[in-house]
Amino acid sequence: MQYGERVIERRHQGPDVEELQLRLAGFRGTVPDGDFGAGTELQVTKFQQDYMKMAQPTGVADRATLEAIDAFAEQYPINFQALRCTCGQCGGWGQGRFKGQYRAGQPKDEAFHRYEYPGIHRMLLWAVRAVFFYAPQHKFVITCGYRCAIHNQQKGRTSTNHHGKAIDLDVVMHPGHDKRDDMRCCNDVRGVLVERCHAQIGWTARNRKALEPADIAPTWIHYDVRCYEPKYLENRFFCQDLAGLNARREIRV
Image (cartoon, rainbow, N blue to C red; front, side):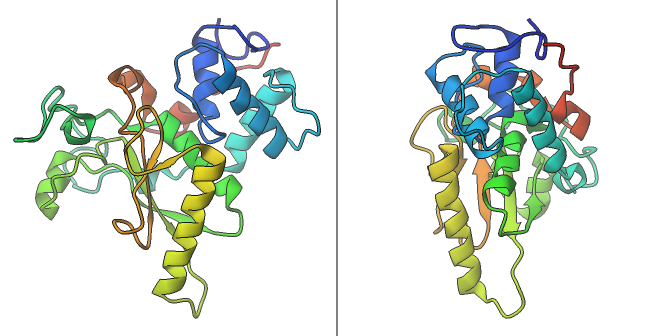
């Protein structure tokens, strides 16, 4: 069943459930496995409670909920120009190289996977929208999105997180604020993401969104999906433009 063709609820399975899980990645979040269980029901419930302001959320993704998710996307657009790689050679999204290859001397772990994914993970970008929603007191700018292997060579880096699995956000400071204010704001936002979005600080837990700790990212917010299993990092989960991210479909229910 395709997204928008039925009301989605407990025990449903299929592509529409997977799409729902992706779109609600920032509302607690779960794995996009296409199986509507307790985790997905919690996603829907939190979205209905927090975004839709429902006094009695149902946990059922009916027409009103699906339409509200589309409205959420429109309210919080993503600047893809800011996400593109700036190496000047790859076209913005790498060249699809190094699949199955890992950094020399490192374990075969996603943290060291050199593959240039074909865009930015949709789940991550939908989760970033929830950052904007849950922290309305702040203005954010995207400071880093895709960085391909060429860009790494140009800058002397070896990290592969930004091969489509990570995004860096900066909190715009008010006049008179200093670095300590910046650090405090970033810590506050990380706290919100842990509490509201089920993100983790560091990369201990499998299949959870991750934030760099403050000692690595003191004045910015690094958000990534490198802890997810390979089946949740397939090429089909990545996008290169707003249309691909939103994947708008007619709501027929």
